[in-house]
Image (cartoon, rainbow over all chains, first blue to last red):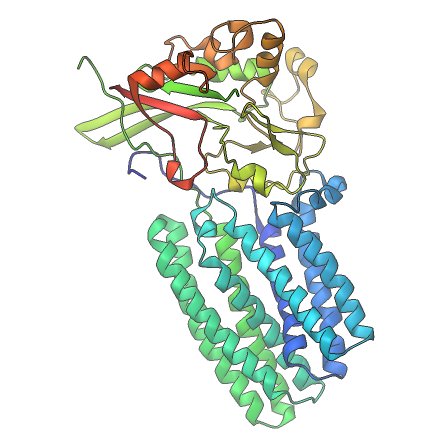
Length: 280
Length: 214
């Protein structure tokens, strides 16, 4: 690609409503995945499943509000062959069915299926961005690990809160939170290092400005609070777990909102060659 | 097999925007929607400044990302390479718009007219089916098809050619079948140096830019 051409501009087709689908859908599927991986059977798990579904539904409702022809929404199921949006819709339907089944009939194999479909939903969301060839910050393959890791991190944070709230200590949930947040931070750093040089101006600055928030608040701050929550009695642990979850989740949501609405520069137009002028 | 493509000779385009006006007149697009745009690029810094006029629009890619991402199958590709939108299927999710590397797609959510209330001509051609859905250049496929039915040759006979090509005062725009080695577009590509925009993305655009002779 050459340097000739007018500057790119931020896409305006997808606004906060589309971002909300990634924000809530990611957290919801992440919570269901975290519940399948780390929450023992009991009230915390029982609450996590409908809460996860509610978040996924909220995200899908937000994106439904954005489409130009909402009463044709069922047409979204027509292109499973190539469209990740269609696949996300099917994955969402499957996730709803499996989660309801897992709620009433929990079991080892059901946890596996539950985790699979939650991961599939988050994967579809990541691939929706990846397939957007018009937006350099989205089509970057390194966006996929970030979207998956932040989904799991946000879900694990909610799982920790539920475990503490229902007095069901789950070392696995704490471990999952630590692994997911560290993986998210690493994925973000790798992603930004790859994408930021391709952007410019305010979108580049917006993306780079997310890094300290994600690292210091969303990762180290959240993990420190979570460690304290694990060490202190339940009375304090609840407040600390809530603060840790808020830090982890809000940082992830901030990153996704920035990615969708503020760093979404198109690539403008560029000419590899300029036309010759005059006789030659 | 036929593959319709368009050529813009950057040496000839004078930026008069007649093609843009002809497109709007032919396709009755609302304000701010220009299926055929002409970019006025100023490049470089004083005193070494160049000005280039670049017609852009849907590139009718051979491997169109807009079609792949479309969840409703509203975006399709004809056998002759023209990428189409079925307004009755489209849900207006705009996924195609963010997938298009050429910013060729538009979505108008509510009726808009040049002066608020519709003028007589706007009211006559107002199509509610085009609100809330994606729209873009069609390569004037209806004109091409109608011309072919009459035995005319697209790109040569005006009645079978896109409106923008017909209107170009500088013969900068050309339309034809690139699979036909004797066609006007094949000849132009054989005689000139050309490029396609954002070719590194692998979309194989059906829109070529001439910039020098060979």
